Length: 344
Image 1: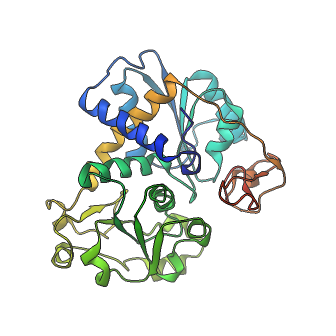
Image 2: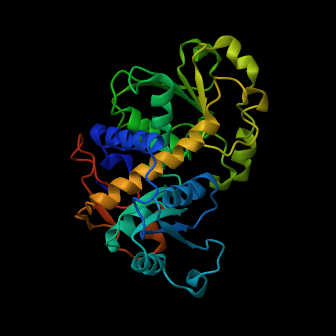
C-alpha cells in the first residue's frame, strides 16, 4: 500500500481499495489487528476531528498512541529542527500521522523515516485522509462517485480539503464541479489547470442549486490570511439555513469538513440533507482502513528530485535547509516541474 501523502500518488484503484476496507471495518470490527503497534500523532497545528479520529481508529484496531505536544512542550522550543523531531518520533513508533502548517512536511517525514507516514494536513496544500472520508461519505449517501454535480463553497484558496477532493473527483468519470467563492478566496489556478473534469468558477450558488448533488461548505479560515482586511471582506459571505432546501434536490447532501463558524445554521442539523456529523464519524473507519492497509504492505516511495530550492514561502524547504527538490511529478504533463515537497 502506498503512503497517504497526497492525492497525486493515489489512483482510482487505490482509493476504492481504501473505501472497501473501511466498509469492511465498519461492518466487521477488528479490535486486535494492530495489537502492539504504536501510532505517533504528530500535530504541529490544533486539531479536534482529525487527531481524535486517528487516536480512536488506532485504539479500535488494538494499537497504542503517543502524541507530540504541539503547544511547545517539546524540543522544538529548544531549537531542534522539525526533521530531527520527526526522526525521533519515527524511532519510537510503527506508523506516523502528521499535521503541519508547513506544506510538504509529510513528504519530508516520508523521505527520512522507515515507517509509513500519513499526511493529516499540511498548510494550505492537501488533506488526503479528509478527502478519503469525504469520498466514503459520498459513496454511502449516493451509491456512487461518478456523474455527480458538486458545489464547493467558501474558502477555496486556502481550503486544503477542497484542493484534495477536487483532485480525487477528477479520477472518476462524469463529475462536474462548481467553485463558488469571492475572487479573493477562489480556487487557485495550480489546482484547476490540472483538472480534466468540467468545472465552473462562480461567486453565488442560488442559480445552480436545483442541479447540485453535493453541497460542500467550508469555513473562511482566518488563520490562513496574511492580510486581515481580506478576511474581513470575506467572512460571513456564504451562510445557509433551511431555506436552501426549497431550491435544492430532495436528495442533495450537505458536507462540511468542520469546524463550522456560522456558515451552516443549526436548523439544518436534523434534516436528512445534513451529513456533516456522520461524515466526521466516517473518518474513524477510513483512518482505520488506511492504517490497516499500510501496516500490512507498506511501500516506501522513491525520492528522485533534483536540487533546486522551492520559492513557496510556506514550503517546509523554506523553514529548513533541505536542498529543496523539483521533480516531473504530473504524469500528464512531463514538462511541468513541481516542488518535491509542497507540489507547488
